[in-house]
Image 1 (cartoon, helix red, strand yellow):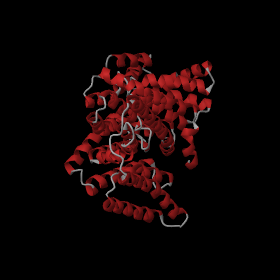
Image 2: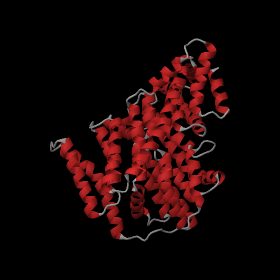
Image 3: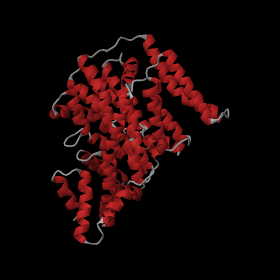
Image 4: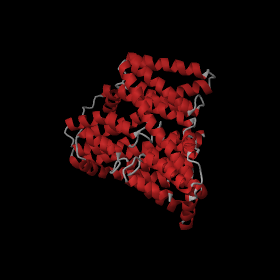
Length: 464
């Protein structure tokens, strides 16, 4: 009965969050077994969670980075590093998304932020609108895979999994996806005879490589100073930041400070300096320092607007989580989740078969539901089966999030699809067709991540 009411409300065009909460309320009133105030009580308790405090701060950090002119710096850095390759701006698109993913945490922010710059630049250099939109859409899926990640925070809270472990688990899969996308760009460049978009210049490339080396070496040097030389952690990090700001000022680096966002987050969490929630606050402070004080590209008026946008987005996300928590609780209380688990386990006890079926389900659901809603609905149903079959929940979290990100690229609810259609001024139909070839690297990445869990679990097992 609960599922029927939910489907009826959804099919009538009611937003998914209201449909979830409303179906539970109608079911309770219909059966009369529980008082109606249980709906409000369970919704409030569903968002009364410390890890969820990270949600508004990660959203704010992404919005601040997006509005502080940092996207231009990332684009110029990526252009210097790989723009001289054949199909250069396609490679720039992917690399820029890798870097921006370490700040925004969402696919939509990536598509709307860097996508606007990248699509215009590619069209100005003679690339077709379809290719520009396709590579931008595919690379936008990196946003929630490379840490930090808003969907990982939601999944970690729902599945009772370490958010820090999920963040680490996304690094290698994100790198794998980026490599496969760049190989796809190289294929199209070879097929169409495209050349480079900027001239190869040693000073420009060496400067970009120097920035990359600093980003890699900086945390390693600090780690050695703290663990081997016995320097105090806080003072060492502060001194290291002073060195970074000095290097940016006197050597004119484009992207060292923005790229340090994920480095600071992951380093802080793995060393125990702060929790993921505190890391989200640190990311906001870092974005404010860069935008307001250092680059001075973010005005106080724009800052207030960013905060208001963050409040609006946070309200939407947390309302979905609250509605999904009562819906998931009712599914469990009425025995729906247990019945589904029993049916699946009667059908197969092979983990690889279950993962195949789960992938098909999540790809389908991702086309119709926003990722936050999909995660909060699917976790209570699928996680108990994973536990029974011995599937690692960190691994399954990566599989779930990637499936739902691919779903964002397709109608009827593909939010990235609609954002890019508007940015590129293409019809939804042409945008959908443009994205189809890019499903090849995405689905290949999904297959590798699903059936080779060591790609996902190697880093988390080193630190957790």
